[in-house]
Image 1 (cartoon, rainbow over the protein chains, first blue to last red):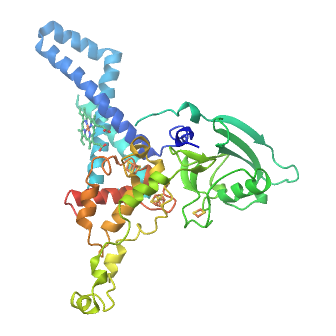
Image 2 (cartoon, rainbow over the protein chains, first blue to last red):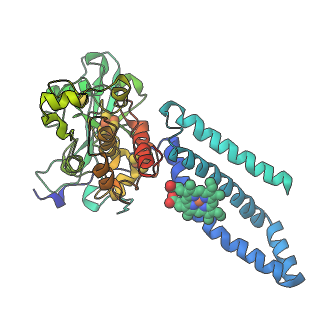
Image 3 (tube, each protein chain N blue to C red):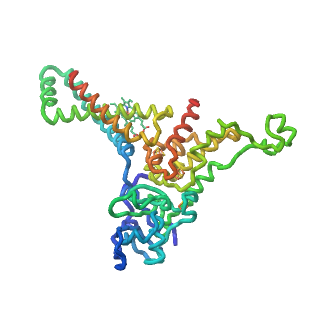
Length: 124
Length: 271
Ligand code: HEM
Ligand code: SF4
Ligand code: SF4
Ligand code: FES
């Protein structure tokens, strides 16, 4: 029986990711998303520099429902990526590995990123 | 390599249903078990066994043994100690890796799904090929490296060891090995780790890294430098992205992710 014909046992198909695992993959997804969002920031910068009509057009885009969704979606993504980034840095210092507190800390992260986004909303 | 779907020959098909023996009257629970045999070219399948759990021991392994004894003698799985110390009966039960012999059936509601450890070549049914895992274990030299053990009694006394050349440890030094020496090398953690799924050919994975740390943390070992040098590699060690599946799943309650972080700290000079 050659090794090649052996089936590969199921992995993603059967594994139930714990909350920390889900958060981890979300950190990567938000990281990639934020890279894309930076193009949006570039676009806004160009509009700022592009005179009154470009500025008004950009303002209208941002005010539209889709624009608002993208804006606050990005804000939450950044807040979340930041919070989990901080958690990564704490982990790298050897702090926060207690298995019993993993879920609680993950929920704290999600709540803290919501709070940060809320803060941004009230400041804006 | 990252490959989210299973190869064509590994897709799992529905299999046979074995209804409960009618005699009972106890609580019947359904066990869905992954099957594959090398004898023909067929794909893996899931067989369903309805078992009266009042007629059976309380652990997942008891059910497997009951099925093998009474329903289907060809059901294949590894086990030896049936008390969580040999590490042979590791498998994936309801989406999480565990030792079948210490895992209570009562911890689950509804159907109980039993699969082999994830992302490994299947030898038969729940038995997977672990040769690569053990080769990786061997690569970290999992033994005490200390030339002082061959000192004469005289030299040993002079360097503070006992006359017979024993390697003494203080209580504190010994305590550093707690949470490390208990590992039974079941590979539950490594095969729960997405990084190990995608890069397991080079990434050592949580079990082997916890073992590596077990020797790094041992005050009697003299090869800390060369051990660290061997690990300082973007693939062997730094594929760990602190996903924490390993710590979540370890059936012995150990913390491989923390051990990995301690190695990273040692390499960063933070220790
Ligand atoms: C617009 C701003 C940002 C962008 C575009 C960005 C993008 C990314 C990307 C693409 C990754 C790789 C993801 C992965 O490999 O899993 C990453 C990882 C990371 N980011 Fe960000 N990031 C941003 C802001 C931040 C901030 C403000 C922090 C502060 C805490 C942060 C902390 C981290 C850390 C610690 C990692 C490493 C995670 C790991 O080890 O897997 N990032 N980021
Ligand atoms: S650390 Fe835990 S899960 Fe990993 S091999 Fe050791 S006992 Fe098994
Ligand atoms: S913490 Fe590291 S070793 Fe553990 S599951 Fe995550 S990536 Fe794998
Ligand atoms: S049979 Fe030994 S650990 Fe389960």
